[in-house]
Amino acid sequence: MGEWIAVITITLLACISPGPDFAMVSRNGLLLSRRAGVLTAVGIGLGVLVHVCYTLLGLGLVLQQTPWLFNVLKLAGAAYLVYLGIKMLRSGPATEPSDAPPPAMSDLGALRTGFLTNALNPKTSIFIVSLFMGVVRPDTAVTTQIGYGLFIAGAHVVWFSLVALCFSAGAVRARLLAARQWIDRIFGALLVSFGILLTLT
Image (cartoon, rainbow, N blue to C red; front, side, top):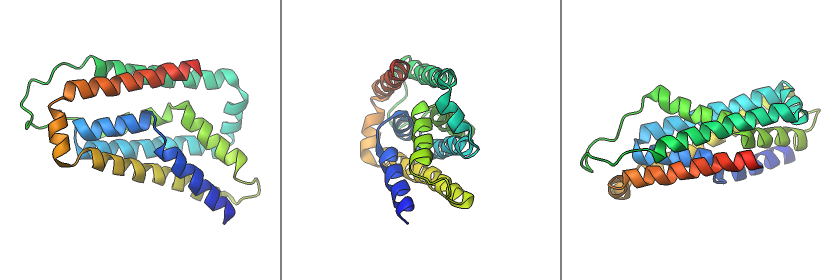
């Protein structure tokens, strides 16, 4: 029971801490649609499962003990965040009326964005590997460890779906859509900043 409490507590704290996942979900929920935001959250959960799977297979220890491999992952993640950020920074002014439908993003595109944002995030890798190496005992049953992994992924989906719902609801969103270009630039600057910080840490 104590192990479960530790996993739940650490996971919840990791979920609510600000980062690229939060920026991407809130941006898609606010500027695109509720559906895009929620699907981005689902993609994040799938990205978490990638980290969980290689950790359970023992590859997380290899990643932890192979600095060059971790640096490759870190640089790939940083490059992806900077790429997304620059795309947002280069967004043009909104020419359509504020009550026009938001720009479209396919379901697969939203899933892919959330998945890559998380799967290429080395901080998530550090979190998952550290959790399983430092909190989960070696003699914990594999089925229980899989349960931990499913909980971690599910918690991310639930939390970021709530974020998407909050940013996609109400009259506030309608007012903010009028400043769509500047909001895109703010989120773009955040993603570029996250990418630069990854390369420096």
